[in-house]
Image (cartoon, rainbow, N blue to C red; front, side, top):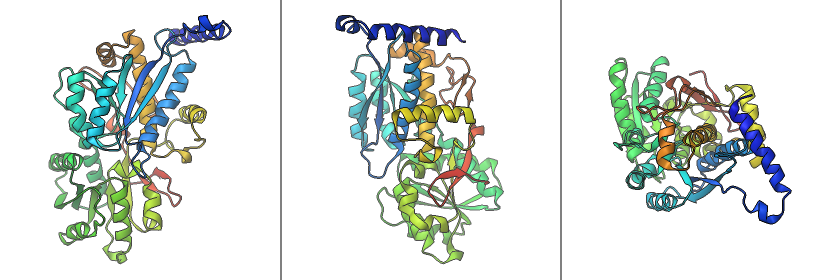
Length: 398
């Protein structure tokens, strides 16, 4: 048994004794260490922030059952809703920064929100954990020291993987269909950087759409007219569902394969797309699948998730990458708090850069972060997935 586990069990024993003492003695119980979530909870049809919360709560159930951190202090969540609006996110960051004993803030799905929050993070020296947002600049932000750590996909990994998947299928003329946001521009830049290593591929056109557009079929037709054999899509669930329904309404010979970034998995995409989804050749990049993970680690996650939610099976987990990545990132942060022996954000930030190997749900991190690398994921974890008829995302053979 590890020293840490023995220590946590001693703390649990002490806590059980405390529970039998009079009220005055119980009043001296350790105060919680706070973790924040700044997420898009109030956005219609979105499931990403809820997935991040699920992963964090499952991890906290395990950590607190083992004695918490810093000699028995439980970890507790503070949740704020940014509704995917940058101004709300900036306000949330400033409010979090002012909270005593709040160690770090976990962000949500939307890169444009996080990018707008970066100046506030820099100004307040708020430790920020990114379990979903993928724009490169979120971590490559110029901060010295850098208070942002990511356990998630980044665009400079996503686009080459999507383009290589197209090339392996013999699809060499590619159209890019991108959201007209900082996330879309990040992916356009990533695609341009990837092309020299893929000389057989050609980007025949790039079409931009705006958030909340109610039709994307003209953008799609523009790329098809330019000679595209496949479309690489950067979209969230709402717009992607519109596109899928519009493509399915076209004659079969006009339906191009779609290789999608993972924003589509952050909401009720399969339900919004409906039966049309099974009429379109669509695959989506992921960093992880519960269906391919170590069964013992999946069982542990499900047991913990069952304590804090209605999740009982893999199929019950919506936005699975968000849940898995937030789960691992919470455990890693708890280790850093222990190493720092403090809730001081600078001390915890420094500790995150000097952890040992951690065997997580998504992968083994050896180590998760270093002073020169604030990206935790190994590119080898990337895979493509497809939606089954029941809406569940499963690994594909692409």
